[in-house]
Length: 443
Image (cartoon, rainbow, N blue to C red):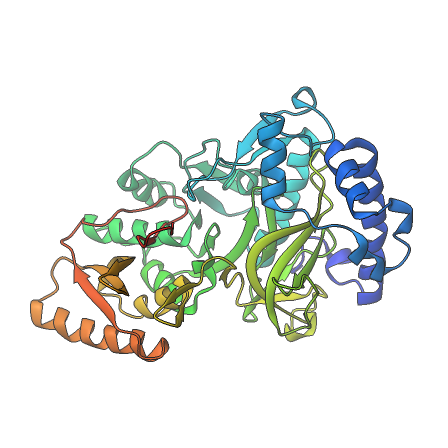
């Protein structure tokens, strides 16, 4: 069986792939400069002109695009800013970011051509995960203005799978539809995959014995946390695969293939993904952690060139995988955000690290992290919701171990642990927000 959606480009020699990327980059830069007022202004301010892009090292001449600059453009020229190369009359759809951060969402326009490309990117990923036209795929997603799994939906249709849109329903309704329709593939955020499994257990329904063989995860870094993925696979009796996209490109840029080499392949014939030091802006070497910088060749109405994503990643060479693809990988997927790190009494704390530990305790059904100033010092509290039937002595035993593991992983930092009753914590269908920083001046 063919393992690749696009065998020609997924197995290109590296020098051929780099030549393809550079040729596309030259065309993209010229396109953006000719049609986007934003890039005309940005390039001029940086002293850059498209004709200066003569070799791969010249990419450093191109100025970075930041979300703040995009938002300033959007606010100054509402509703879409002057980054797009055309107006709304050329588009067929408007989508936004999820808005979970509380900021004004970015507003994206897409043409028919853009949506065909977005679907194509999902086909790369889903085919690599083993999804085939014979599958029945359930998309557990709200189908609103948030761009979310829209591209996946169209990708499933393009691939030829029978697609079930699971919008506008309760979690119970979705679980029952997954079983009633005989779904073999389910797509959701990692958090919602766990929620669906919890709901099935409460209803006495057997997900492990269902026809589902693949769970496609996206929308949160948790899809690449080994403990979270293992818990999802145990609860579903299926294999779980990580992927990642963003509203700014309208689709995914990486996917975890069926052989699961400990990372996710970057779709390099359609993206240039650089990893930079967040402070210096200089590119780092393979194996070093840094910030993702994305250049996308597919969304024609919104050229995305050297966009600083604030995602933390570690890029490793393509030959770390044995599946024949020549695309580089992000080891461990998306590791978090540049601004995710919290400093608590001199100790660096990352939400991903906390989740990795908590998911090792399946008796904890949901959790939240609260940081606050108490007197003259900062305190961090892990609020946990254990399973309903958990005896008190068992709760004390596992939270004792949990507190020790958290402290051991954070230089002895003491985590307070607070219990809430069943149903006491929020559930999330889209991106989960589990950390609240209540210290003065923090968000």
